[in-house]
Length: 155
Image (cartoon, rainbow, N blue to C red; front, side, top):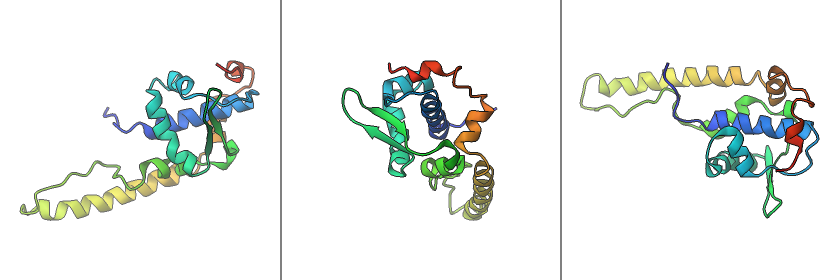
């Protein structure tokens, strides 16, 4: 099975779920990029890159300094996965459309056809993701505050 090379959406959902679970378990301190990177198995710089657009949209907030880090700025039930997708995917094609040779009879028209298909696929993805909130992700994962008590502890 082919894997997407853009992991920003998956990392964002993971991090948002981590922040939501920690807050629900009683954590009162921000979560550092290093801790989030450890959970997601990506570089802390990548975590910050993913969280930047989410901060600009008001979904998370950050504090600088030695005791700084990231916090969820919204209720988990108030944010849909479609919102996160739109913030990170923006106008990037879902299907990985290439730049064909316009001098070719097929190349001259295939871009438009694939762009239309890509738009329909994107709309289907956004529709589906719009049905799921971050709160739903916690529920589906079987969130129980006792199971996530370790997230309440500042590291």
